[in-house]
Each structure stands twice: as structure tokens, then as C-alpha cells.
View 1 (cartoon, rainbow over the protein chains, first blue to last red):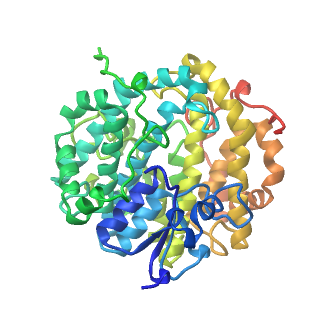
View 2: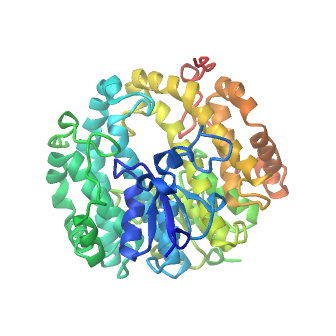
View 3: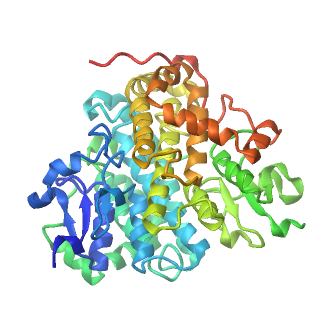
Amino acid sequence: MGADAAYHLYYWPTIPGRGEFVRLLLEELGLPYVDVARSPEAGGVAAVAALRVGAGDGAPAFAPPVLVPPGRGLEAAISQTAAIAAYLGETHGLAPADPIARAQCRAAMLTVMDVVAEAHDVHHPVATALVYEAQQAEALRRARWFVDERLGQRLRFFERLLDAGGGPWLVGAQLSYADFGLFQLLAGLEFAFPRAFASWSDVAPRQLELRAAVAERPNIAAYLRSSRRLPFSRQGIFRDYPELDGEPTPQA
Amino acid sequence: MGADAAYHLYYWPTIPGRGEFVRLLLEELGLPYVDVARSPEAGGVAAVAALRVGAGDGAPAFAPPVLVPPGRGLEAAISQTAAIAAYLGETHGLAPADPIARAQCRAAMLTVMDVVAEAHDVHHPVATALVYEAQQAEALRRARWFVDERLGQRLRFFERLLDAGGGPWLVGAQLSYADFGLFQLLAGLEFAFPRAFASWSDVAPRQLELRAAVAERPNIAAYLRSSRRLPFSRQGIFRDYPELDGEPTPQA
């Protein structure tokens, strides 16, 4: 099969980041894809860098990830993680069919991505253009709020979605792309905030079940064992700075 | 016509906020809607507050806005501004028909909403749970980055979308819900950052044309003259704190 029959994913090669939310869906669906940054013949990292803002007149995305459907060029480039996930899910049967349920599924995925952005901003509250060390004082204050309040609010919300729909998936009985988003979010939160995550996990029993069920799906299990699955680190969105983690302070 | 034939919009009654992105679409499309917070018989503000996280077991949204389609109950509630906008646009002919163009339109709207969140976080970089005055030092640092760099990056990106598609709209020749999003974003940025916005406006000529064209659409023009259109203030997302605005520092 030629590369023309494959999706092309443009994302950085050394971090899971937002690209991982797309990769998980391509893997689950068994769709052939070219991971451009790790494919010199597809252009490698330079081809990813060329897509983002400031890179040139034709760049179609503010930032990676970008997905190009099979047989198409950059005129068909789709950016924004949640939009890519919805496109894959709705095109390949990993989304509800009813229009209102589709919208609710998109909303669940958007809320996942809101928490991704919040977790990132714990270590970058001032500017993405500065390194963490240049905004550590602000980060410590933001971490306190995230650990004490926000993380619990977010986990309680997803748990309520699972309760309301009857589970086991975010949008009721049918597996959707949003479930893979929540899976990856929980993995990142546990990596970056192990003590806070452990403390809050008693409000999230259904989420832990969902996470385990996603990990056991055959294509996902094989992917997680492969070298294609990148580990978290101190680059990217989820970073294990111990000073930003902690036990939540009991609220009055 | 009874309220059952109308959309129900749940959002706060005193700020444009994220609800305004939904209101503009309902107005443009001429769809009957009940603005629940301003309608005592629909439950008023208490009905909005009951939807959000922490409010109760059945609350379907992390936060307003929430839209309920005509004749349906809260089981059909759609949250997340970008998901609501896409639902309205795709249901009522204000979105592309091609699936890839639909995904690109959603991505454009998501990027609009990313900038909305960034503009909010200029005055709330540490925690939404704290007032601005309790995080002013951090806000001043974040404002410097937003005014100097980020605002220009964002405006350049939207301008490139307009250039690439040939205009006059964000997704090529067809008006879509994303255009109303950009309209409202530009209005908010100009209110909150008048000096920075004026300085950067030379990179955004097509956006200023789009904004004027949206304002002249008959339903929008009538809405903007009505009492339903709420002014910006120092509540909500876009706030005119002069200390957070300024001329961009020339970059090296």
C-alpha cells in the first residue's frame, strides 16, 4: 500500500502531547497512517514545523497536531485536536449517529481538551514563550488551585457524565472517540500530579474503570506495548515537577 | 408559538461572555429562542446555575452556555460554546457540507475559542476562583506577553486563513458560524485591549472587512441595536483594565 492510502499525522516526534489523542484513535481504528515527523521520506520534523503559525504563507494550522486524510494534500489539512478526533470518530464509526448525541460527544471531548490546557498552564501560567523556570513563582500559585480545587471539579464532572449516561462510556452505552481522550487525559494527570490524582481518585471510580477498559482493547494494548507509544517527560503538556503536585488542602 | 418550539439558551444574564457566541447565531438564523436567565417563567438565573458543575447530580455541563433544542429536555443539553456553534451551523445551513471542510470550520471556531480563553486568562492567570486583584502581579506579566506577541500571532493566523481561502469568510467563499465567532472575538479584543488591537490591526485587514460585513447583515444589525445585545464590562471574559493593555514592544 502506498503512502497515498494513509492518513498523514503531523506532530512533534519526541512528546506524546496533543498528537497522542490522534494517534490513539488511528491505532484503535487500525487505520494506516504516516507519522510524518518520524518518517524522513514524508518530510520529517521540518514538515511539521512548516505547518505552524509563523512558518510561512501557506501554513494551515496555528499549531500541530494536523491530520491530512488519505490521498489529499495540505488543502485538506485538519487542525485542532478535538476537531481531528471528531472527524476520525464520525468518519469511522467511533461516534454516535444522532446529531444531538454527536454534539454532546464533541462537548465531552472539548472538556477533556480544556483540562489538557489547564494542566499545561499549571507549569506555564504566564507565557508559552517562556521556560517553566522563568514563571515558577506563578506556577506554584496556580498549582495550588489546580491541586486543591480544579482537578477535583473536573474529575467530578466526568464522573457525573458517566453516571448520567449509565456508562460504561462517556456518551452512554456506545464507545466513542471521547473515551480515548479521557483515557489519555487520566494517564497524563496521573503522571504529572501523582499525589493529587491518588487523593482525588475516590471521586472517579467509573473513570478508572473506563481507563482500564480502553487499555485492554486489543489494538490499544498492542500499541501501548509498542515503541510507537511515547513516554511522558518534562517536555510537553504533562510534566512531573514534584513541587507542582501535592495532597489537596482540605476545603472548609 | 409555544416555548416548546424554541431553543432554550442557558447563560448568565449580565455579561456577553461565551453565551454571546451562541446568541449571535440564533439571531442570524432567526431561530426562536428563550434566554432562560432573562425569562422568569423558564426558571431564570436559578435554572442556569443549576446546570453547572457542583450544582447537583444531574447537571449536564461543566459551565454555561448550554443549549437545549426545541421540544427537548435537559437530556438533550449541549454544552461547550464551539460544540453548540457547530451544532447550530450544521443543523441550519450555516456550515460547509463537505466533511473535511466541516472539520476545518470546527477547527477555525476552536481557534477562536482558544483566543477567548487566552484573553480571559490575561486577567485570571492563576485561578478562576480568585478575583483579578488577587492575581494582578501575574496578570501584568501575562499581559505583556499577550500584547507583545500572542495577539499578533493570533491575528496573523486568522488573516492567513482568510488569505488562503480567498475570503471573504474564514472557510472560503461560504459564510459559516465561525465567522460570527471571529466577529465577536474581534469586538472583545478591541474592547479589552484597545491600544494593542489598534497597533496590530495593520496585520488584520481582511478580518476588519469580515467584521464589518457581519455587522451589516440585517438580523445582526437589528440585534446589535436591540437591548438584547449586552455591553462588555469589567465582568466576564473581556475586561478593559488599562494596565493590561498597551502598545506592543517592538520585537528584536
